Length: 85
Image (tube, rainbow, N blue to C red; front, top):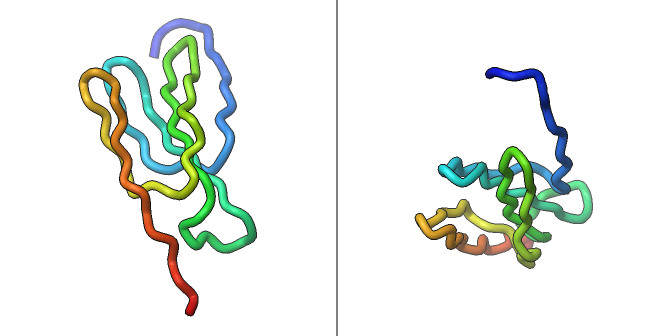
């Protein structure tokens, strides 16, 4: 690390997977209600650069990882919620 400056950014939710690309760090964050994670809730994927944080639209559901194409398209399969029955 070089330099003497830093920037603090806040991204809502619990951290999930990350993918590093030349145009930034992509971070999955997720939320769920209650105290047990049953793979329900919402997911957001944020692209973090030294100067910005760009967030995706909210995904209703949880994802099972994600991939990013060279043009910045994000592919993310949705997980199926766990069943308690």
